[in-house]
Image (cartoon, rainbow, N blue to C red):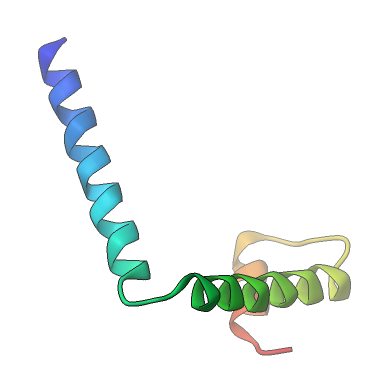
Length: 66
């Protein structure tokens, strides 16, 4: 049981490190701008493909710029 707690702390630390790497040096306005851009891209993809598709198709759709 103690090992499980240790691994949870390691995973938590890795998640914090990953999130810090993604946002370091960015202001709140930068983060909101990036989020807005990504939101509009996802909304455009879902509007163009309302029935959905496989994960491979969705990944391909997301790689294309709309």
